[in-house]
Length: 126
Image (cartoon, rainbow, N blue to C red):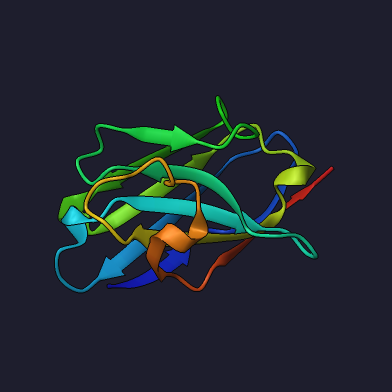
């Protein structure tokens, strides 16, 4: 699976962005997917995840109620709708495909993900 994230950019605090992650390769629809982010000088952190059937979603505490993860398996794409953006959301955002067919309790751990996109920069100005 190859992943390509897009949709990042510069936005003012309180604004919105929608990230997309396009997948190529077979069996995208069977992979749970996740979003992570990495700010300068900081570790990569979990943002959101969605099961392959989209019946389960998970969010990091800092984005709950503001971000929404979704997917369209027919289009091989995962989305991250980001609303009420804050300066602390500034980071490079990565999409990733989970290594197993179903999430375990480690869904927020980056080492559980087998495939990664190249990242897209999100900058939120105050």
